[in-house]
Length: 152
Image (cartoon, rainbow, N blue to C red; front, side, top):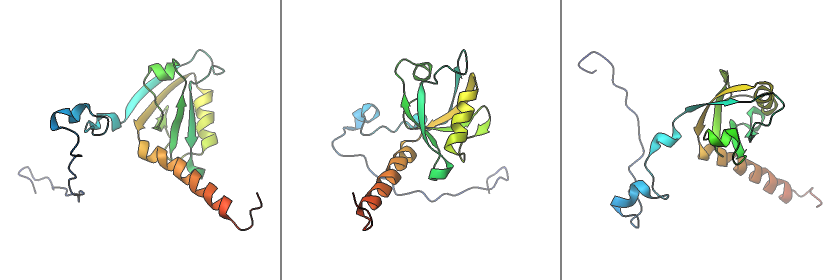
């Protein structure tokens, strides 16, 4: 208990891992190999405006409930409105216009994105989850190619 009567919450954290020796301590904030700025992983809101629903979104998505993962941005068109707003590959779309996208089918996600001209998205940069969408594809492809019934 704290002095003001609130209960303390304890978490089991992994052991601290020292940064690689080749990255000088003064250069750690600027190194691509060791960036401890967690700001980039926090959820952020983007509002994408289109003139009409037939206008391109400026990005592609992959994933979905049927693939046992979230919805991720897989490509952003250079100089599109989405690009200018800072949307990037490996962003997980958490919600669109207050609809939760964390457990949604791919087709339903596409439908919601395409039918709105004003798209208020909450996203977070989550490369680990995004990479796993490709890992699963590679795993399934490898198993298909190794199958004894496969005659390719």
